[in-house]
Image (cartoon, rainbow, N blue to C red; front, side, top):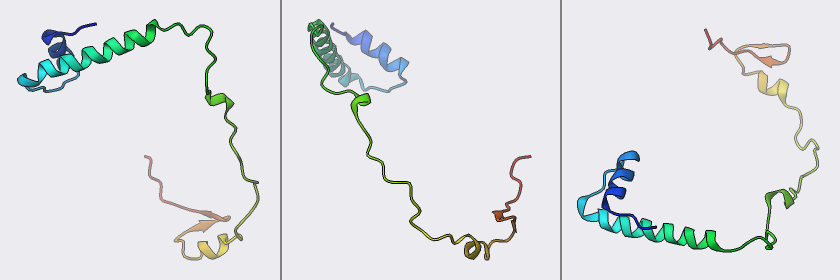
Amino acid sequence: MSLDRTDVEKIAHLARLNIAEQDIQEYADNLSSILDLVDQMQAVDTQDITPMAHPMDAIQRLRLDEVTEADQRDRLQTVAPSVEAGLFQVPKVIE
């Protein structure tokens, strides 16, 4: 697929891009090359090709769910302005 000057100007307008006049032809050539490459890739028959990787094949290694730090809630709440039933109280921020 080949893009010309008007196509690039229209794309630039839609994308709200300001392209210098002297650069428009270079953009047209580059975008045309990219679209030609996409056409080539779409023409390849991949019917019998097995995918190489898939995100669902990945297994995440998880660590054990175990406590690694001591409970310091009481010590940390001693400097809080307001605490009730073990919870920090904060000012209401939604009116």
